[in-house]
Length: 110
Length: 114
Image (cartoon, rainbow over all chains, first blue to last red; front, side):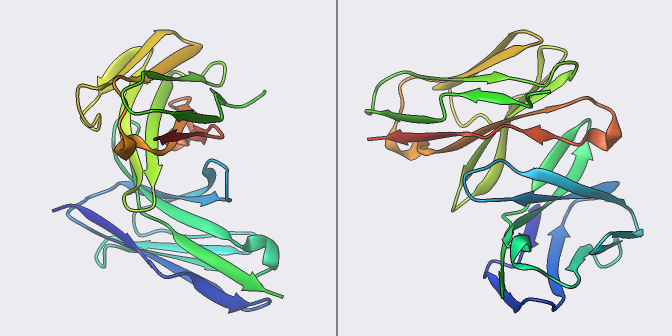
């Protein structure tokens, strides 16, 4: 069956450290993948898009997408308490349709 | 732009009642999506429209759910009759079809069915 898995447990890290979030999937062949951030009581907000086997940097974000491993890694370097949120990966499955993972809650302590 | 607008923000109703959720997409966007989010199942796509036409409603749980998009600036999601298991946060999102299908989400409607 098709599945998208993200760390189900909350990720707790100290301010200044690098947070690494994973997104693994099975039985999908997405051309690209998106990452969204969701704060409590709000809708998800788009962060970035990454294509097959690409590596991308955007400010403190560093993201990879490996189609052989069927995995995307999302790193936040020099993390800050303001980075605390839930992060969702979303796979593009065709004609504007995205399938979302369940998300990973990140808590950055000062 | 005001972004995607949803109403109401909160809805509490009793089992068996009809519930109507409303969405105004971003002006100029040609695709609209309805999602439901719960702790157990995460964010699930219910239905989406392109140019006001329903394209994929395979995520609609059952016949109690229906959605319409009478024009480019308005959509509704109706649940009739509502059940306690429908309690969730319902999000509407819109997309321009450009920019690799980035979706812009509304603030959501928190529905509680007693």
